[in-house]
Length: 595
Image (cartoon, rainbow, N blue to C red; front, side, top):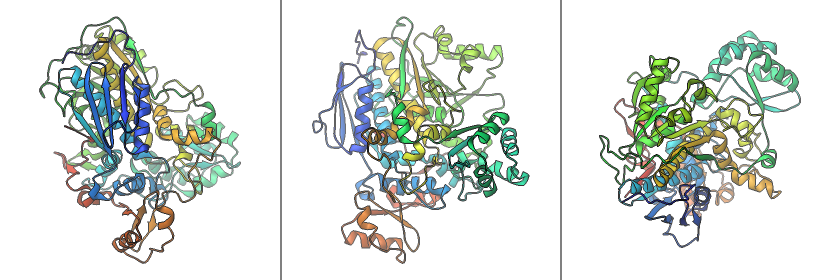
């Protein structure tokens, strides 16, 4: 079909309306994002069961179905999905036993993936494809969020650092909780030397601290915690300033609610004069189809670590050709242990299927080459440090001069929204935005999860923003600058808790919330609704299967908690879902289905 053209479109879903039904933890987030993208409506009950429908704007109706899981799996809510997919296991590594996230992480990820699917379907229509129905499930979203940890569990070798309980945050002498961040071993050592920490503890602490992003735990020496407990916060800040490390005191949800500006988790800006309709030539995979709405489009990705690479990975799953820009010698993270067939399992989880081109962005000739590649691309995506793109002559204005129809995407830590923002890494953003409170119930001390919650959710927001930009480009003919951030991801995740804080309620969930129950040989997780009743039974001497049976006999639903991610390959709740790639690394299923 011809691209629907609307003269005053400033948001990609202007003139469209939506209806929703389904699990409210998921559909409420979907509805909020659709409104921010310009759609209106939402008449509950008008959509198909467990579904979302978008109509108007010259498009055929776009539909999505959303459920928790296959009904046969027994996964029926956030708690059971977190338990089965391994989220509880990974989040609980810091504590030494499975723990549920008190925030609705799987539901939030599912909602963002659902919006992605709807946007991708509309892009496919605008590029001449047929209307499609997208399906999303929270269990598949949950598997995606732990995909790096699952890949490592199925690798040919063990982890590079010990998997054991322990990790930040630290306490000051006044009892303030704070996060510490540095990517430099020299700064790490200098910080602790300034606090007179024992030399052997400094040396022993660096490796688990460095690898905590990969392992979701950091069992460094207890002596380091004891050192900070003897130093007031002024002394800790002084040590950070002298060393080049950064510290961030954990904010409360009440504090975050007072400063929350209500901004969307991404920003879209039209670039320059109308450039004419973007090219729609089909690439090797052919033109757009139901399952590959981005086929024929090219994404250049200059991403590091998790956020931007994951965003580009999802665009590739939707059919785009992804060309990864790597430094001379290749991405050093390719060698990060553990490996599958000589390549980092974690790296494969984010980058399998991408082409790679080595470019030295510090060299004039290579920057010219990159601009030439951008002239033929549809999307340029990066997560460089703030200001670096402009310094290199690779900002949106520079690349728009060679490709006015380009969607230029930047995934950052803070999106320049906070004046006093620390380093924009996952755990620092968690600390500054009160995620550390939101993910812990009232009887647990606030602590950012050592599972990379925001890097993953930030990557999902990055994909959502790029798809919104591509659809806006189709409807206006303009190139688009899109910005997403870890801060935006934190705002999406903590929104329910912040609303409770604004109403004057306790924003944290009650004591024991989503805490698994021990059995003789493992753990089980009851549903949120049935948790109080299930907690009345002593199941500690029963095998897990018998404990589940006993609860079922009393009308209660629960599921076994996955404690070993490698076991997911054979888990009947995910039969046939998890495969292995060409290198032998575990691969989770695509998070959407199209029909």
